[in-house]
Length: 221
Image 1 (cartoon, rainbow, N blue to C red):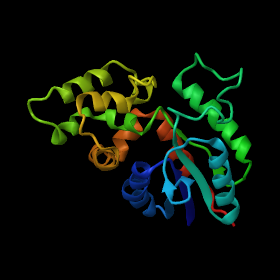
Image 2 (cartoon, helix red, strand yellow; image 1 turned 90 degrees about the horizontal axis):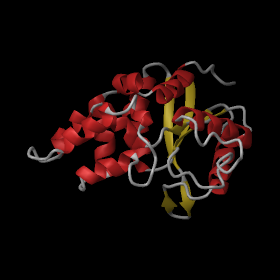
Image 3 (cartoon, rainbow, N blue to C red; image 1 turned 135 degrees about the vertical axis):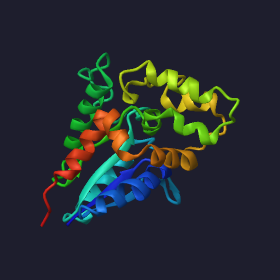
Image 4 (cartoon, rainbow, N blue to C red; image 1 turned 180 degrees about the vertical axis):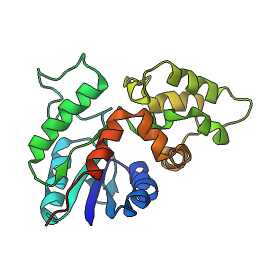
């Protein structure tokens, strides 16, 4: 049996882990428990300071050394004090995969706990929903061109993880532009569930590598 705490950026990721990842992996005796990042007493969700992230991750790793701890944090919008974000060696002109891998390595070094597995979503949770834009059809008016527009975005990139991270064209911004009623915590997990984990893994290599790492973990003492 393997236990893994998944440190989530917000409620959407928490629901995704609880409703999609956890039931899938429980059949393999891998038990995932989502925990939302706490920004301040009584408030959860959103990463605004790496100092707070580091404190909570280290505490979680040390609290239960017989379990693993991993993260589910958006690459998009990371605070400037995140390890490596302002470094001269940060691959600013590299691919999203290169950026995420670089920052994950420095995150792992910063936390420096043997049971920690770093993971960043490229570029954000909503990228996963572009694996099958037609799954938005149940949530938009039939006369809307929302699905067609989202499909055009998907067709124009190598993978959903290649949708860029500017404040105007990040995955969530593209969805809101054609579906103003989009509610991340409601629609995000439901649409991901309709798409299915297999299809998301097939189209999102960085996400797939994270889950492959989880599947290959040895039990801890």
